[in-house]
Length: 208
Image (cartoon, rainbow, N blue to C red; front, side):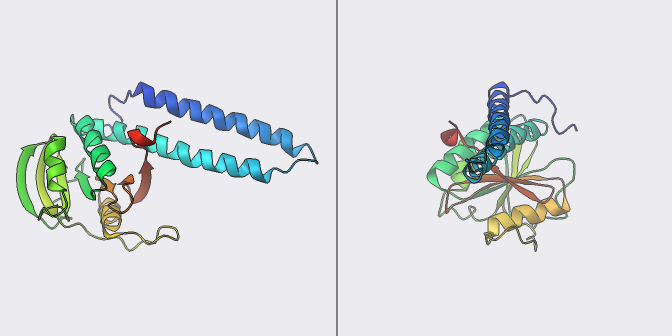
C-alpha cells in the first residue's frame, strides 16, 4: 500500500510551507550579515537552528498523518488520542501494523478485538490499568491486542538515555515496516518511530 495515499492535510502543509519560507529568509539574511565585518553571525545561526528543530517537528506531524491514513481510516482518532494522552502525561505505546505481519516480532498480550476509539485507547493506557505498560497493536481500524511486548533496540540515540517505550518502538521498527506512536509519561512529548528512526511530533497545544 502506498505510504502517502490520500495525503492531503492542507492546514499543516501550509504551516510547514510557511516555516520553510521563514528559514529561507533567515538564511538570506545570514548571507548579508556574513558580508558585514561589524556583525557576528553566531546569534543568527542559533536562531535558525531552533527554527529547523521546530520545522522538523511540524514535518513529522504532517508525514505521520500521511503514513497513518494509508493504513487505517481511524488516523484522526489516533491523533486525538495521543493529544489527550500527551496533555495528561499518560505514557503510551501504539503499534500500527502496515505491510509486514507483526506476529513473529511481538510477544502477544491480551486480545481486545474492538474498533479504534480514543476513549478505549485512553482507558487502556490509564495509569494503574493492568494493560497500560505494554504496547497496543492496531491492524486496519481495530485494536487487536494490548499489553504486547516488543523487541528492544540496542542502538544508542544521541546523548540521552532512552526509556523502555522508546527502545521498544525503535526495536520493532528496526525489524519491520510498522509505525509506532510513543507518548512519554515523563514529559508528555509525542514521537513516532519508522524504519528504526525516532521523530518528534507537534501536538495541537504546541502549534503557534
